[in-house]
Image (cartoon, rainbow, N blue to C red; front, side, top):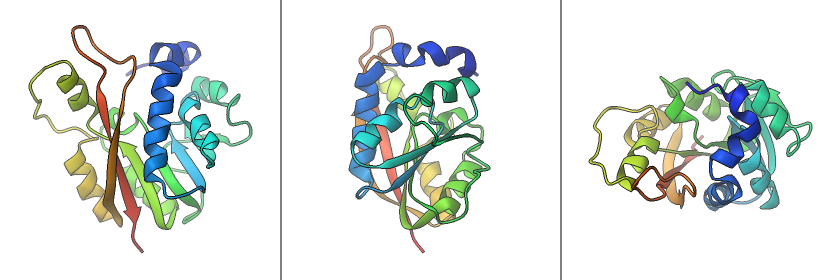
Amino acid sequence: MLDYDREAAHYDHTRGGLSRARAAASALDRLIPGPGVVLDLAVGTGIVAADLETAGHRVIGVDLSAGMLAQAARRLPGRLARADAAALPLPGSCVDAVTAVWLLHLLDDAEPAIAESARVLRPGGWFVTTADKAAAHRIASGLPPDDRPRADGCALLTTLGARYGLHLAAATSFIGFGQARAGGSDPMYPVLGFRRIG
């Protein structure tokens, strides 16, 4: 896995910068019904979270990488914590939305992060996440589908979400500006919105 502490200083520049971040934040904002408190899992440099703030949300962030959190501190001062998405340092039912952009595909098992997201969401709150990252890249590169199961697969996320009272209620997508692989185009990343019932 990538060493995010070492990558932090130049991460934004090598990952599509503001164009990709703004596209991601706009997609998240379309699925979060109104301003509220948003917990951003794997907040990284805070570039997406900062754009969510511009849209009117109050964002707090967690990340395991100290390097990423150091970068994010410029954008979300005083609203960050070093924490695992599977063990959040928050009480239950305390946020209006949880976002996870480019996180679940990194996990061997997404269930603990989904369970924690459901726990900290208020009833009626939203868990909004990117999905099927590898598939998006394959399609953009003109490659055939890959049938291997992935932690961020839409079908799996829908099943796991339902287990924790999170029901798929909306979807959108955004262009991954600057993410084209050799000979391909920029991928179109799916974004799923799960509403907490009860």
